[in-house]
Image (cartoon, rainbow, N blue to C red):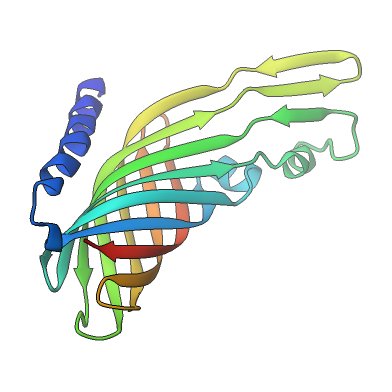
Length: 205
């Protein structure tokens, strides 16, 4: 498993270098921000709040109807302490929590299929493969005078992404875009999924 992850990382690192050697008028810089919504497993969707995301990417225009994109995104989710306490029947107790946030970094190679590229408003479809790193911070539990710490963890997994979006041309070199994707990471223990909803800017070089 680790060998496969290393191979994916090497591929993701070398692809942008190859793309940068392409003709400049075929390159697009991408910047985005938005919100990310936890989906699976249930303990992720029930115990962590919707968070924010931000990312950057570079695309290569294969044709008027397709792009190849390398994209890196950061997603951050706070632990929903109140919801968790309610679930375990301790909503009115003196049990307190600190920490427990989850951050997710994704790096994808994405194939983008563009519909109606000659129009100002162009819908598109994303399908990609890549790497997902999930990091959970330490959680401190406070009960009366006792303090307990649950250590966080960080691990990397193989990941797939799919989604839809729409691009709105502002000028010959600028476009705004909005998209919603479904990101899924696969580990031996579980499958982790979330939905990043993004607003962004595309700049043609």
